[in-house]
Amino acid sequence: MDVGAEAAAELMKHRPCPHCGARARMEEDSELRWVCGVCGGPRVPVEDEAAHSDREREELVKAGRAKKMAFTYRIASIGLSLMGALLAALGVALGAVSVAVGAVLLVAAVAGIVMGIVYGRRAHGKREEAKKSTFEAWESVAEALLKVRGSEATAEQIAREMRTTVADVERMMSFLSVDNRVRIVVKDTELVYTTEAEAAAIEAQAIMESEEEDVDATHTAGADARRR
Ligand SMILES: [Zn+2]
Image 1 (cartoon, rainbow, N blue to C red):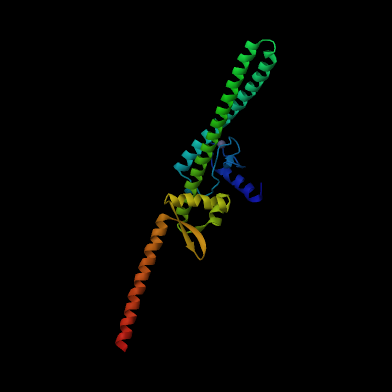
Image 2: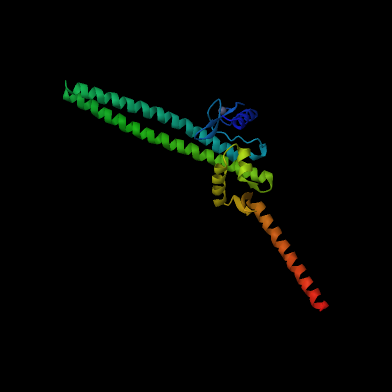
């Protein structure tokens, strides 16, 4: 863990975990980015209180539940697969003594292995569900951060506030812009992000200014014509 991550982990001690309520430090997670150091539930490490919302909380709680279910399914999958393998070995060994007993054991072994695969798939599905809900929570915080700022922000600025990578922010912003929740604007050859409301206000301002310029130009042209 680098110094920045260490500081972020310390920082979030002040905010209670939405899963277990503990004011605990956070840990980096390969799948869910940041998780509670006590219960392992996913979290979003942003300082600004105004960026946190009920939506974020709901998605994090959903993700936390999915993560727990994924764990349960994974244990069941491993248990059933192991049982299947043992029954298969036993079936082969006893098959030499009694074909009937061997056949029954092999059928049970196949059933165990098949169920192991089914539970393995369910575990994978729940892990994906946990990731999806976690990302939804992050996106809602990213959107709220832009609202709180009330001005454009670069991917670097948001990445710093959210303790994540620039690539991650760019991915979030492209999803948010598809949903019309965030506007991507090119400013001085750089991509910046802003809320839809802010973008609309800037556009209205630009139109007003260009109209004023047109009026000024007409006045100047009129004055020039009179002078001639
Ligand atoms: Zn927790």
